[in-house]
Amino acid sequence: MNLAASDNYIEIRNLRFSRGDRVIYDDINLDIPRGKVTAIMGPSGTGKTTLLKLIGGQLCPDRGAIIVDGENIPELSRSELFNARSKMGMLFQSGALFTDLTVFDNVAFPLRVHTKLSEVMIRDLVLMKLHAVGLRGARGLMPNELSGGMARRVALARAIALDPKIVMYDEPFTGQDPIAMGVLVQLIRLINDALGLTSIVVSHDVQEAASIADYIYIVANARVIGQGAPQELMRSQSPMVQQFMQGMPDGPVPFHFPVQNYQDDLLGDLS
Amino acid sequence: MISFFRRLGQTGLSILEVFGRSGLILVQSLIVWPSIRGGVPLLIQQLYSIGVLSLVIVVVSGLFIGMVLGLQGYTILVAYGSESAIGQMVALTLVRELGPVVTGLLFAGRAGSALAAEIGLMKATEQLSGMEMIGVDPLHRIVAPRLLAGFISLPLLAMIFSAVGVWGGYLVGVDWLGVYEGSYWGNMQDAVSFSDDVVNGIIKSVVFGFVVSWIAVFQGYDCMPTSEGIGQATTKTVVYSSLAVLGVDFILTAVMFGSF
Image (tube, rainbow over the protein chains, first blue to last red):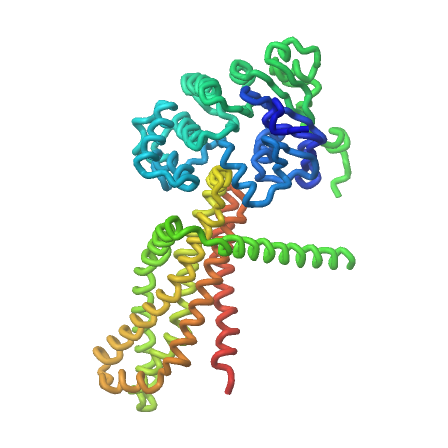
């Protein structure tokens, strides 16, 4: 089978990952279609960010394959991995801007280390990327002078600086005011379509994610509990999917963290 | 009893693991030194923030320690009428021991803690992960220049410390207490051997520079990415590197000057 020609940019097969005794993913399968915006949703603490780190090769799975554009990430050598990462852009939840560099130098950073372009060319490219996120005027600011929404837009400009094939967004909407959120939603869609990217958005904001995603995976209890286009999921009969999409406090996804019986815990022997 | 051995084994294994991880970080960050174009400006920047900015504390401490040595030496030696030997006493104490050791301790407190906190905060704010995802190895970009800057700065700082200390001893001994200037310098020149004393002192400071910077970058790189973790990393850096400097100093002294 020719993996590179497949319609899926990323194929995850039988992935198992655990931290200590806690199983984060138990034999999951996921496909990220090429050129689309795919949302990965689920309650907090189910390891959605972990999934992005697995795709980026920052964590190594217990077993299973993570095939990104034909390359199995866990099997790559260190230098091949760094090479593969230059085709990925990742937007961290905190932005992860380098605090000792200006906005301009942050966006120029990947260009300077991975290309041998002249400074004039780098300047043009950086200004183009900053213009795309509407922050060409903020080029001289330091990251601590930016608001949360602006920092994420700068991080987005940096993530697309090398024209990656895929951009991964880790909780892009968390803690944003409605205007900043609207801007980000629009930018993610626009940049995906204009640059012909593949995008993965990890989020637990149902409305926002449903409004931009072409396809949604819902992850909970170490498994994929539902998948499909946003409309299909809204109409899904599965109680777990319904609980998540409607935001109900209790249901098949339990309110309680795994714990022993309440009565035993209160009356039990303290020793 | 069995649980005691189990705990002992677990502790032993975790200590070995720490040594293994720190060794890997050291090897991986130094094995590929990036291109001259990218590397040298980063190194110069770190030499400034680690070395040049530690200069004030090193010079001031060196001056005062030299002055105290001069004063103490005089009060002891004057009883035997040999206060003219104060020059060699000050110089030997500084060059062999106090120069490298005190500079190592000051360096651990001033630069080591800053290094650990800086790298730890970069980890906590995902800057290190971000750099990895851009395809740049933070071990090469962040850790290696800081390690090398530490190796280079500490020996230089220790030399400056000793030189300023000798001058401090001169101020107290000669200018204040009236020891004959010619015997201060002359005895010093006779007693201090370049190949034994000065070179051994420099070797000590090179080793301390290596140990302190290694501990600092490892603690920062390996810390828990929380505010508590960064606090622990800086504390551990200062405690471990101070103990390491003192312990290694004893071993080196025994090897260098112990053959009677």
